[in-house]
Image (cartoon, rainbow, N blue to C red; front, side, top):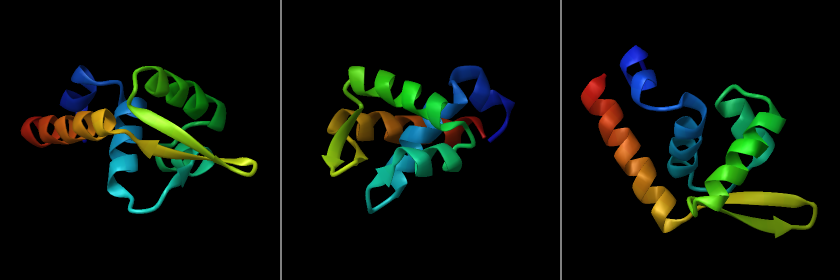
Length: 88
């Protein structure tokens, strides 16, 4: 992705949505932070905002929170990917 993508989107939140869309199995916060190259605490802040927007949901299994895209989140991720293809 080049500079044109960064012009329209904040890279980390956009990449988190795309990363969540691409996986067939659930993701943990630490995995997602590594994948988009940010700290765990930064990833948590972004994920909290995405949850408030209704784009992701959390499922608690024991001590672990599993992150899933909502239908709205999947739609937004699809649109981000389409825009990325156009501007690349």
